[in-house]
Length: 253
View (cartoon, rainbow, N blue to C red):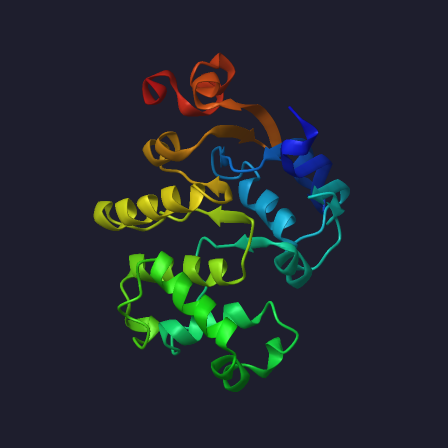
């Protein structure tokens, strides 16, 4: 793998909670413009790994580099400002604010006046344009003044993605974006992720294997905090170790 193509790398990253090693000596490289899915059973360490990448947690050992910057102990706000966006298993929006206000808060977070909230945000043309553009990308341009709490669950996920995009990330960390959705809502989010994948790098945790196989370029399989296998979708499909440990012969066929 060409080092110039690497946007994010982990070098021997571990995370311990007391005596439990939730992530163990993980070494991974993520390429620019690639959709890289991280899969594995519950308790495999996937969300802990995402939390390490977003700064929600700091590693017990090892190093994390983003575009050559050492992010190992950086807080979430610095990581966001450097260009990494994050979504969560549970939708992380402001339900009493409008869709536009949610995106304005996110858009303004990239500015030095980020703690002054709505008044300067409304006056700043760039912030407003960015917020409106991201609502459009997330297919919510017809609902800027709708209170976020009145959106459907799927639309709330779309809004969360719009908020993440408003921070202008190069790398998106997506933690189970399809969780809790019906087939129609999941299809909309999957279509949105396909659009985003054209211009950005995505690291995705998802239990829906059909969705993973439909969108991912690379897969990493985790088990008990370790990386069991990394490769293309076909390489992972054909891995006997993966089939035996997690996916199963029938589910991969």
